[in-house]
Amino acid sequence: MNRHYWIFILASLLIGQSCQRKQTYFAYYDASVYRVDEKLKKEDSTTLAMIDPYKMKLDEQMNAVIGQNAEEMVKAKPGSPLTNWMADAMTESYERQAREKLDFAVANYGGIRINAVAAGDLTLGKMYEIMPFENQLVVMDLNGVQVKQLLDRIATYGGWPVSEGLQFEIRDSAAINILIQGAPWKPEGSYRIGLPDYVANGGDDCDFLKPLPRVNSGLLIRDLLISDVKRKKVLTPNGQVRIKQTQP
Amino acid sequence: MTGRRQFIKQLGMGGMLLGVQQYPWQEWIAGADITRITILHTNDVHSRIEPFPMDGSRNAGLGGAARRAALIKQVRSEQEHVLLFDSGDIFQGTPYFNFYGGELEMKLMKEMQYDAATMGNHDFDGGIEGFAKHWPSGGFDLLCANYQLTNTPLQGKAKDYIVYKKGDIKIGVFGLGIELDGLVPQALYRETRYLDPIVHANKIAGILKNDEGCDYVICLSHLGYKYENSKVSDLVLAAQTKGIDLILGGHTHTFLKEPTLVKGSDGKAVVINQAGWAGIQLGRLDLHFERNKKGRCVSCKNLTVG
Image: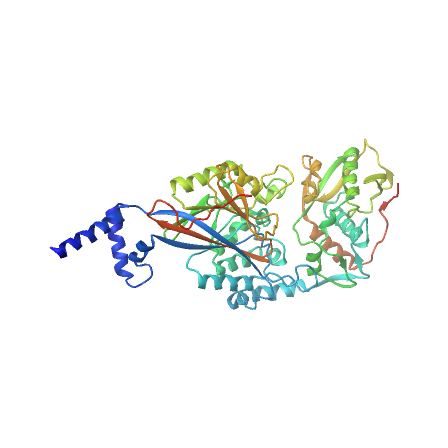
């Protein structure tokens, strides 16, 4: 009797518990963050072994010398030998490959990802350091008013890489005394310009360019720079002043 | 499952696990069991396979896939339930991508056992066909709820969402991408159509919570953390949707000291996190779930939105 009583109690306990369904609650979270730096002594050996063959082949190609740089070229605002070279190389390589003239080319200042290019060997890897992104050159026909809007934007940034065909002064964050292909800028003029798709698509506050018609050249800016180095074999810095800061 | 079947199953489990901590008697005495699920996440790794070169620049020596892999394997050895996610822009930024098209990035993600990722704008840089070519080597689920991929090489491959079951816990995960027009040439994204992320997030989160019975919903987002203008960001997404518990973000390369809490459209807290970029950081959230029959939660902590 006593034994049966306990079995009955136990059984009803079990059935009572199991008839009620479990519910799930999100209780709390702990957040932390790992900084992946040299303090983490361990490197995964499988991962290193997977990277190795890719790295060796890559290093070999990136160390290939494609030309020479005669003197150090620095990046500076409003303009410098490095910014001049970039915009000129974009223009000249494009004109040769597309067989059409541009009035000028511009690039955003942040489009050059290196502060200086040292004198000496120019490797393929250096070209990737200068321009790691896959931006392509876009060609746009702008009217004079649109050109002025772009140059004013460049003025507010304190100067961008511009090619030889363009000269102007910056006063109060506006472009003045603009010369295009040596002739004074005209509001009613029409100008064919080259620029990175990043800018044409509205990057660096150039939203006004976004709705305007353009032709994607399909030519990567880095490839235009590479073909310029290969063609010239030796780069000589061009310190021509194209953008001038003028005191009001 | 009926009460009776569950009863039998529990007895069976108890028999199997006799003497082990999960023995049901202990659980019943304590009144609750806690499941911990560890979420690890990266975003905007940008083909940063080796650490940044030691050239004196700001990030010199930081990152590196081999270190990250060691860290992830360490966590896996310590935790039973681990989920590893990436919020896009796996590609672009070092010559590894330019030369090999993303092949190595994907193989390394497989080695690290990523569970899922969403696509960033730069993941289209080798063309959508370039991503489709290498993605199968990655071994992870591709989640793009607001890209319509009909007539692209990713049609039928990317999913809107997926449900991971860890222990008794169901975690629903979906992905959101950024508007491609203006960021990526159309020649690269081809017929991919960007769909309203808010509308689709509400729809998918509802499916995950109500139809799939998920206990927790995670959104992998490449929308970006915050904008000065009205563009949809993770902050906007969190505020204008309901059903999302956690947003793991990307695109804006944001380093957060701790996750941000935002009130969702139903007043419930949404957690937002982002782990910088380039594999400089690995984010970690340990989610704790309580299961009991008490009809209330014992260990729950209220998430207060500041």
